[in-house]
Length: 169
Image (tube, rainbow, N blue to C red; front, side, top):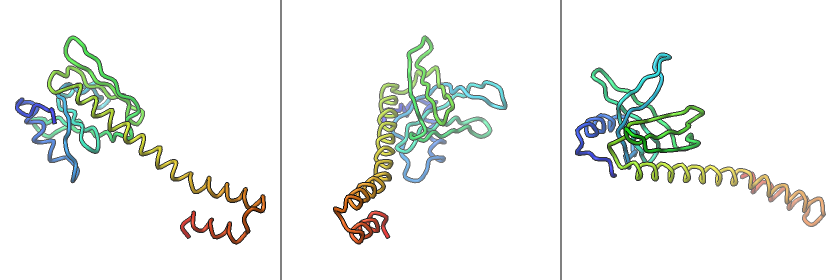
């Protein structure tokens, strides 16, 4: 983890954020900055940490009375961008159709953070593609078997037997 845990701001946020992680969830990368969001219909800026865990992107900001948090599973993130500005780095991404921004990032290794998030997004997208292929695979095989049956290359009994195997019956 390249998150600077010796920095007092990060150490405080990380300490409280740990309580809100899921079982088995580990923080891998993180950055500290200002999260742009809406609160009660008004644009708001909240200081806190964006944590890249092994399961999701997680914003956490400890407040005097409570905390703010928001979770973004990697599979819901459709694009991810970052830029260098005069006041620090800025990251932007779309998750479930909503644009998410964090600006004024000056604490944390932004390059490691961005690379890790992109790797997790690619891994999730690759996994989703494989799942879709495995779901369509039995259907495709059944179509091929039906063609073989229609061409009288296999018998009706052979077709039914294979069909049951493919459907797990």
